[in-house]
Image 1 (cartoon, rainbow, N blue to C red):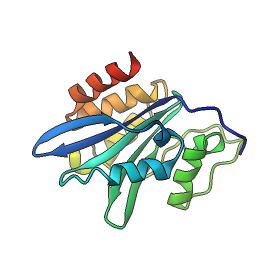
Image 2: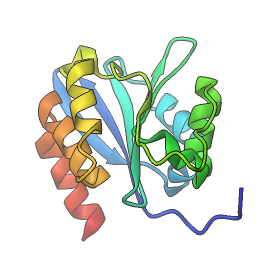
Image 3: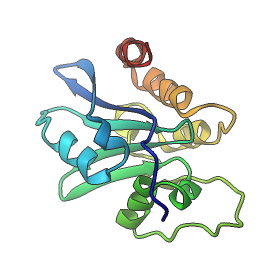
Image 4: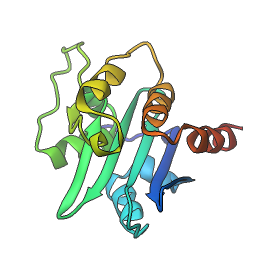
Length: 162
């Protein structure tokens, strides 16, 4: 892969503890290094749900959730692995080959049920991923709305994007 420009976007850590949601920004390295994102999430040490939402260059999103013995991942567009190292790293971790460069179809790769226990079942996640006319931040906003942390997520995005 070619040397990459700095990656635009945002990385948000989401934690649910004691019935309350909390969203915080992750280090900018989380947008370009999957290991950095996973390490940062593991350091949160929450007794409740903890996961990361990454929106990369207005092109795709990644949801990552540490689980015992590994990490559960969802990449909204497998073709992003052709242009972005972090997307290629997701496919590597999932042991999935990247698509051919001629393939123009978009499809997700990974666990569509990554947030099923938090109110976002697989079939609804598929609907969000299929909304190709939306930017990743809009797709993640839909997920936040469905799971119940939209207010916290929106407040944080307003600060990040200001």
